[in-house]
Length: 422
Ligand SMILES: O=C(O)C1=C[C@@H](OP(=O)(O)O)[C@@H](O)[C@H](O)C1
Ligand SMILES: C=C(OP(=O)(O)O)C(=O)O
Image 1 (tube, protein in one colour):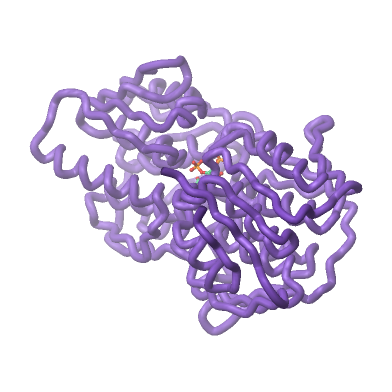
Image 2 (cartoon, rainbow, N blue to C red; image 1 turned 180 degrees about the horizontal axis):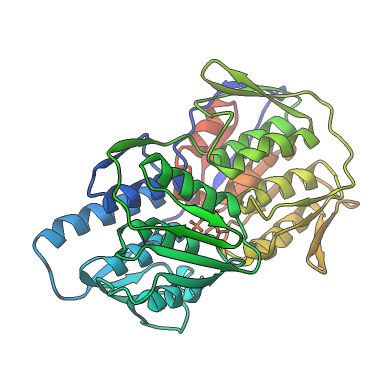
């Protein structure tokens, strides 16, 4: 039975703590696929306990055992709500010997995959849609018989399709050249894929809109996963809402592979400073929130959108945002979810010509607010910090955080929040 979290913060709003964040699920899920493709020549260190990573790891370990005994009938592979696992496994299983039904939650069945499936079919994969055209579940019969190395792929729906193809490219007999059509959304995630491949000896060339990877062998090595900067963003929120905050986050790097590390620049708007420590970073509240008239473009960091929009709203900043087009096809329609929940504190979030604007003129904080989470971990984690402004915050279905940050509630308690399961 799912439970809700009742979150509150009693006494002076001073936060002084050290939080050890779990590994980035994006880095982990790439590292696991790369390790499997390299036949374990590549090892992974600091694997996350995020449910999406635990799921993918379990699937890959299971497949390895089963492929050894060569099971021929169709095998169901269920990724649950893990988008990266769905997209990365579509490509990975296409290259593997076997017959698979790749599926996930009801929401996963509404998250488009046609662009990736059609690209894989062009390359030579045997893929069909088990239910709705263009959506999971997929029937995949591998291994693919490569017909071409040249594929055109739309870049503006999800970068995960491109990462999925890039990771299998080195083991394909002809390699791959991807010509990206339209604007590339979430670009730092493609950079992360290429950087992690480079760490284990896989070279690429990027010319204009085309990325090429030739057939190559993986170099033995270890991919060490950095903690999750998307998870760190919630600590920036907490720092921004506290009266005084000094929070250290060990092992986060100044030069990160994760695009969400740009939270450190964005949060300067809300008066949060980031400094290097001898083992990571520390964030503190300088109490110098800026007035910004600029429109903030979040195309390169969609997973930060909820964190930033909620904090801007709670601090009464009528900010405007662009680059939010992909939010509607994530764990939930994140635009609708934000609109519904921000309304509970009197804030509107409206769209005009792809510019989303907050209006906080009627901002107010009732004694108690219950926020719905829509099976989306980021809704829970973005709204819970409001307990620094609202006497009692109830977060529905508190277990959603497991997807990327299972220790979230424990960490809040460590920082001085009261969190009760109800
Ligand atoms: O490649 C990745 O690890 C991810 C890419 C992004 O998705 P899109 O490329 O679909 O925006 C991001 O939202 C997701 O949480 C993780
Ligand atoms: C969008 C997300 O994940 P995924 O696409 O991997 O399900 C996320 O973690 O915010």
